[in-house]
Each structure stands twice: as C-alpha cells, then as structure tokens.
Image 1 (cartoon, rainbow, N blue to C red):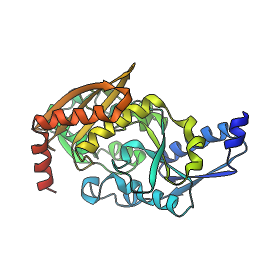
Image 2: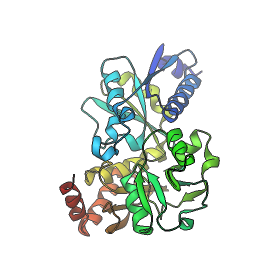
Image 3: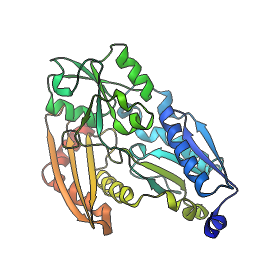
Length: 317
C-alpha cells in the first residue's frame, strides 16, 4: 500500500446495490477492487430492492423506465446510509438528479446482445412465428426489422428468472446482454453472439457506473483508480447521443462507440417499435470531447427524420 493510498483510504465505505444476482456480482466486484486498493478500509454492501425489481408484470417503458432501478439507491446516498452506488450503466438515466455525479466508469465487458435458446443455434434458425422474449424496445425494433416473421413478447425479471421462463418453454429463444451472462458464469447458455452491426447495443451496455453525492468530493480521488478511461470515453459518447435524442427505455434507440487512438467511432440508430422505420448512422470525432461525437451522431439522424419517428412514439405513450 503506497503512502498516497494510505492517505486516501477511508475507514469505511458502504456500497448501495440492488439485490439481484447480477447487481450483487457488480457490487462484490467493486468491493474486491476497493479492498485490494485500501486493505485497511471496511467495505460493506447495502442490498436494496428497487421499484423496478418489484414491478415485474409490465414492460419498463410503461412503468417509468430504467430509472426505477436507480432511485432507491440514490435515496441511500442522499441520507448517508451508503457512500457509493454501483449500477449497470445502461440502467442509469441520461440526466442524473441534481446533487449526484458519476465518479467512475468501470471497464466494459462484452457489449453485444446474446441469443439464448435450447433448441436453435441462431436467430436465423428460428421458424416462422417463433416467440422471442426480450424486455427491450431497442432489441424488439431491431429484431422485427430483420425478422418480421418472428413474434416478440415482453420478458421481465432477473437473469435467472428469464432463463427459467425459457427452460419452461414459454419462448423459443430469448435475447439477453452477453455481459450479464458472462459475469454470472452463465456464458455457456449463449448459443450465438449477435454482432453490433445486427443489434446495436444499449447505451452503456456492459459498463459499470459508480455514483456518489456531488458534495462527497472526498471520494473522487478514492474512486479514481476504478475508472477505465476507454470505457468512460465511449460511454460518454453514447450517453451524449441518447441525451441529445431524449432517449430512455421508452424509445427504440441504441449506440455503440469504440476508441481508435485519439478518435471515437460510433454507430447509432433510431427506429419505430415495429421496426418498419429504421434509421442508422455513423460518426467519428476526437476523444477530447467524446459527448460531442454522440451529439453529432444524433444530429445526423435528426437530419434524416429521426425526430419524426420520436414524435410519433411520444404520441403513442
């Protein structure tokens, strides 16, 4: 332990986390990283059940969006019962409430979507009328665009619940984030990885975010070693794209950025829910202002009519 680490090390840190298996894996991962950095620090996990975990009979787009997985954790930060919260970045709203900041972005796992099925090897193998489960309008729109003969049905619940529903025969296949399956040691359930060119990932998919109160400046340097700069830059670009389009889980859109030296290259899309309207674009720009690359990508899509698609979606909420 260096002198700097000794100077920074707090006596105790409490991590707020959802109680699902995947969320707890994420919290335990950050706990282990912090304990390795600061051996004298007592790092604890405060498990919490969020509104998004409690309401499982409706699509997220109808009950308030992915922010429902974050709100209770932010309350724990606000009242001081936790020092930091660990999130999947794809669950973090584009605009954090006043008084909160993202202190670090953890290294990204595989950002691709995964095809999971007991009887079929890939999406291309599914017969006409096969039922595919997904909780995501983003996935639904891209699936319906490529495979209009498939039937897409809502699938909520944690990873284990979704796999159980597949195993019970409720679906011919389900689509999940590859990162979650890999982190839970369930990578063998993946029959096929879906290329980002065929299914553009969700903004921030596969990355971890660490949120703190904005006034907890004492934690900025403590958490800095957990920040993965390439992931941070790419996620900033993706979130800039989504923010420019007022994106949430109620809007079928996605973006995927990759760093290439001093530049960021990214692809994004906006679509109608049924996939009949699909706009895709690419953009590149300097890492100096990653968010601006995302904004440029959004502007290119708006110039092609993305605002018309989004306005139609607003009219159907």
